[in-house]
View 1 (cartoon, helix red, strand yellow):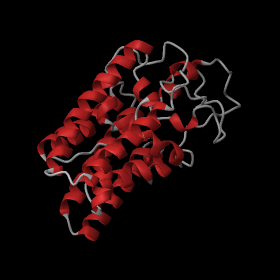
View 2 (cartoon, helix red, strand yellow):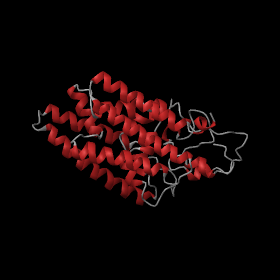
View 3 (cartoon, helix red, strand yellow):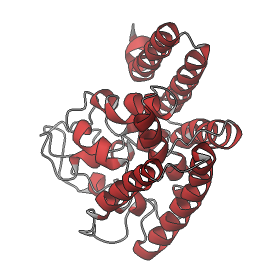
View 4 (cartoon, one colour):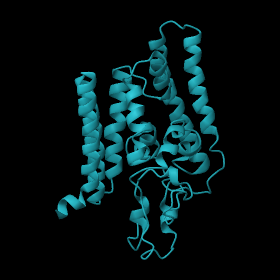
Length: 275
């Protein structure tokens, strides 16, 4: 029982993804979804398992396993646009598959369980940005988070315009939009990281996906909580957090609470194991 208790989080995550994988496989009669979500679930669970075992590369392993699969196999090889434009595309065509299912599971309803864990363990954009040298913010958070709503609207307008214009070869356009979009995201993310000395600046200010993630993460089942009796208010958790979250506040309304990516850097920095 002690082993199960120690590894309950990776076990829980694996079971959740496996339940989704089996349900979609049987419902849609497509074995791809069994493979897809089983693979993602196993990859994320391995990352969390390695973290529990105090492996310093734990989250990076998960990011690479999932990120490269989504970027290279699904995106470049299979031609699926897994960016937000792909979500709008399938939504407009009324097809519940590929990006639509991915967003429903990972970025719309999934955050009710695991918050913004996707940002911490599976995002292929953050997978690259987290290799940059500014793991913790070197300057105060900027009040420009509103830009993410502009990129969100721009992605919607772009796809809507293609349909309204009855563009030909729209699938080909979406494939190239995926490639160009990723190049733009990486370039913008790297520029922002060096400009603000913050690897996660792109996530905080530009990423349109957070428009889905933030409101759902407010109700997340999995949350980092602070044991007030152990906490000595040293501030080390705040300094270690890449997303500027106040982990010492256990309320849902804590500062930047919906920004938490469950990276657990705060728990590693806490000298009293209060988190």
